Amino acid sequence: MYQQEQDYFTQMVKQCKDSGANLVICQWGFDDEANHLLLQNQLPAVRWVGGVELELIAIATGGRIVPRFSELTPEKLGSAGRVREVTFGTTKERMLVIEDCKCSNAVTVLIRGGNKMIVEEAKRSLHDAMCVVRNLIRDNRVVYGGGSAEIACSLAVSAFADTVPGIEQYAIRAFADALDDIPMALAENSGLQPITQVTAIKARQLAEGNPRLGVDCNQTGSNDMRDQLVFETLIGKQQQIQLATQVVKMVSRPLRLPLPVCCAHRRAAALSCVA
Image 1 (cartoon, one colour):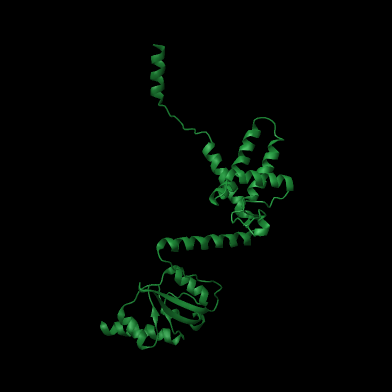
Image 2: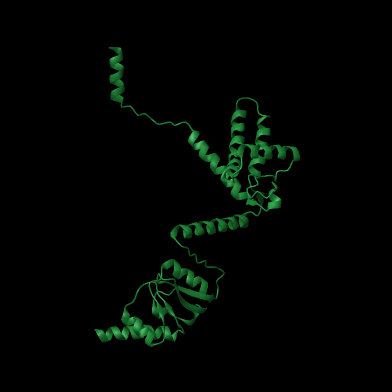
């Protein structure tokens, strides 16, 4: 039995070597005996690689995932410039780095920090930055930030409310007032007087006809967001306003719950009323 197992392992290692491979990456594990045979034949191996990571490695290196050793061919092998193991700090955490891949256009970002909170905050910031780039790829139109877009929209909605007769105009004006909450929050978080700042900016936008004026959060002395290079993606701004509107509509919708009453109870109630 032992000899049969040795022959089986030897045959698998030979198939790997004959295909021209010089590194084996396996999703599942293999015992120390198989690992020893691989090292004897100068064929290093990596085991317990996740399925998602294995697919990414295959895409980056231009290789194919092979379920059986008999299917190994030189055409299915991927290629990379260097494979190395990196150890970080005193935690003995190790990472396998595959560099100079054949078909990789991706970039791996390694985030390190003093504690978990810092690492999670850095991950969130990177995710937000990538979402901004994604939105720009989908739609490259931008609006000015600093609350200037919300103030301009608030003025436009208020002007439209003047043309609407009836009580509907009060709902439209409430929508315009809700748009002012974003620049007011920006001013308050920047240590400024929110009501004073937003009122002054709205007056300047009306007087100058400049929709680029927003809250000077960095206190540079200029309220023109074009001069400060503060921009936001148009698609992101549209999604924010649409989502907020949908949430308000859902909350303000009247709550209607069916009140099923048994027919027998109805009959009993009717009889008691007749009596």
